[in-house]
Length: 472
Ligand code: SF4
Ligand code: SF4
Image (tube, rainbow, N blue to C red; front, side, top):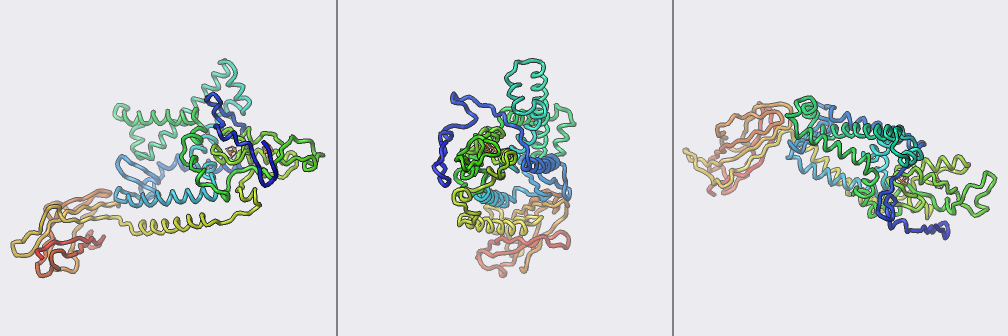
């Protein structure tokens, strides 16, 4: 490690050639992270209680009789905040996805991996649930190291056995919750309460997902963020000099040197504020040294900020040697500024949100399509009028079932249904066929644009446009 001057910190970049959790011979280096403590850890814990409560309660919350959140890909039914969406709303999903991606990019450009440290379910479960249980059963990192080195005696079997049992039970809980979001809480209850032989597939799914979650949190752990998560891997292209990330203030901290007592004036002996205690390294759950600069492995969990603040206060130096900084803050002493890149993303985001809002507010509870039957030409009615055969399809997104009828708008003519009952069930679909009959003199030639109103009793639900073919 070297430092030419405060403005041009030149770390030894060789650490970038390898991942901190993989040894030179390619083996996994297990991370024994010291238990974090401090204000930011407390805030993250409080936030995690809120998100965990929401996550586990989510499948059981109903808004207007509909699930708070349901992503039932099997029955193609989706509910967000109690609002039901159908496959016909796929354009809304596409818009929501695009808006979400732009938002994530914008957020990352400005705030780096803030999401990873504070909101990501992987970090919340790993750092604020499973690791807390590990500290509770096995003790802090030094006890964990000792336990892993000791032979399989009664203490080790008891502690490891209890830890993995608790891990698996929580994984089963996560798996059940995950499945409830996919198939719905009623269906999940039916699987849990019913005869296992009637729900073999559901039970196998539960077991499979439980095993997967257990494997991730008990064994794979930080590797998800380092090696699998695409968001983490995209950081390199999204971050710039103005992005705010968890960073070490090298201009203040270098050259690092051991604490020489409270009477030592560090600047006089050529030392920076970093007392090289390695507390920031010990707490890091991804096994890196933040003093090397921004790294792919850093999930911005803030544990190193808390650890360093604690050290700084103990030795009477200013806290936030590690904190939320951008490279422009550190190298150029610039405060946060809005760059053209941020403005461009915001402009795109605003347009997307406006378009999305228009789609959502323009969305109807009942959606009807009326299309001429493919391959059918116009027909002549026995009284000489012209008739066209249509197929209609009505999707009812409401919780009410109702009878409906059609009316031709502003044109002399008639609608003749082909047999079927004009009724649609709640959240159901009605399909059928009908003739539209119009006198020839009322047509505009070969193709006439017509409008058909859809009624439930006396209430007009919507107006559908279609084409009517005539002899010309
Ligand atoms: S470097 Fe700091 S913020 Fe990044 S993962 Fe390690 S402890 Fe968390
Ligand atoms: S915790 Fe702070 S003082 Fe200690 S090594 Fe890390 S940066 Fe330096």
